[in-house]
Amino acid sequence: MNQFEYPRPQLVRDHWISLNGPWRFMYDDERRCQMPTCVDGWTHEIVVPFAPETKASGIGDTGFHSVCWYQRDFTLQPGSGRTILHFGAIDYSARVWVNDHLVAEHEGGHTPIHADITAVMNGNGAQVVTVMVEDDPHDLAKPRGKQDWLLEPHSIWYPRTTGIWQPVWLEQVASTYINVLRWTPIFETYEIGCEVFVIGEIEEDLFVEVKIWHGDELLADDHYKLLGHEANRKIALSDPGIDDSRNELLWSPERPTLLEAELTLYHGNKVLDRVTSYTAMRSVAINRDRFMLNGRAYPLRLVLDQGYWPDSLMTAPSDAALRRDVELAKAMGFNGVRKHQKIEDPRYLYWADKLGLLVWEEMPSPYRFSPKAISRIVKEWTEALERDFSHPCVIVWVPFNESWGVPNLTLTQAHRNAVEALYHLTRTLDATRPVIGNDGWEASATDILGIHDYDCDPDRLAARYAVSDPVRTLFDQRRPGGRILTLDGFPHRGQPIVLTEFGGIAFDPQISGTATWGYSRAHTAESFLELYRDLLFAVNNTFMFSGFCYTQFADTFQEANGLLCADRTPKVPLEQIYAATRAVKFLHTGEGPGPGGA
Image (cartoon, rainbow, N blue to C red):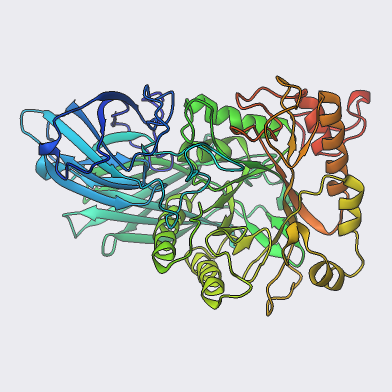
């Protein structure tokens, strides 16, 4: 990953150092070492940020390993301020030392770690960072997403990811600096909420200057005094008046307008810190049975995206690959993705923000219920919400999927309590976005009712959801996926209904669809496209749905049910996929938009 691609795109500083690249590495399955001083047998060199299971790491060991160690040298002279060490994500539990001093401990495989290493740096500039990772491959009570607990990937689960899998970097800041920045668009009053949190030694006479631009036009130039290292203000933008659905300041997939920002922290007249950022004006809401974007009913056309690559697993091979995935989703006619069982790299969210793609963010599941498992989910999910709160592309939060980790929702009160608690916690931490408590079936507390139904008969699928009395016919009598759609005590209250998983047609053009796995099968490109077209036409024309999410974006290991091959090669021409996704019948006669259309 190019060192010039800043890993935290909404709080950017000019001066930083990438620590990606070669590190010393060893496995410690016998748990011989607890401190860096006892590590004396570095057996491998690994390319960070790629996990040791990946070919891209230079190791490619997919066996069971519960403990591993990393180490590398770097040169950095101590400055007059603070030096902060960042890890994008380490799976699963990590301890970090610098110059043999413990500087950080963290549990959770999908959220960031940072440490102030100023006090432990060597004055001669030569520094050593060491990381110990514990990741029990058999622990089903930790949030692990699609990582398989068996030696070989099976069914819908994939190879494991151990250790560092997102970028590592350093930055030197002043003794007092901006630590957290949160943006909240307030569509009703045309304001941008700006929360600035500062950390450091200086307590008095701190001010922050906030500038916001739309292109070359300066929209705001405000100065706020910090109280207790915090500033929380609303920045008023010019009221656009009528017809604001077309207003040039609004962000949408069709017109992803970003507002550039610069924040400068002052102590009196002295500049302490300066960061660049961005935000957007947009709103997401629920109005009766429709999903609303910027105050208008908006049909959701999503695709399920696992976020894996053949040679690098959960880590993108490059920043360009992340951008290309966003571009491909749009080129296939989708306006959003449901990122499945993965907290995605912030650089993906940056490209979704910039290019215009909606994102449903979903917590990776454990597969065993216990108080420890729920405590782990709460901690990591809270960190994910904090990290990604300000991204305009993120429009829905999903704490649970298909009752994974809470398998007895119909019988066990504690399992129901967990879903309801995570729903209300999420709504408390972010009141601006809809939340799906448990996607797929057995819904309780939820703002959107998600249904998973892999029936690949288009006529049968259309008939199932073309019912005059959905409350009685669909929710009480029919069970897509073999599960009840709502739990007792939680009847459908008119929330939007979204078909959040369907399709899953397996077709591998390299082997003519005769092997690999999917929910149904096509053996030729022609039959694959025909079935996809018929399914999408049925779903697009079912008024009950406020949207859909097709399974899936790309082939992922043994699953050959992608619209793209694992290397992102389209299985049929992109313009044909686009036409089918949007139910456009006359693409070649000039009627209907092409891949760049609305």
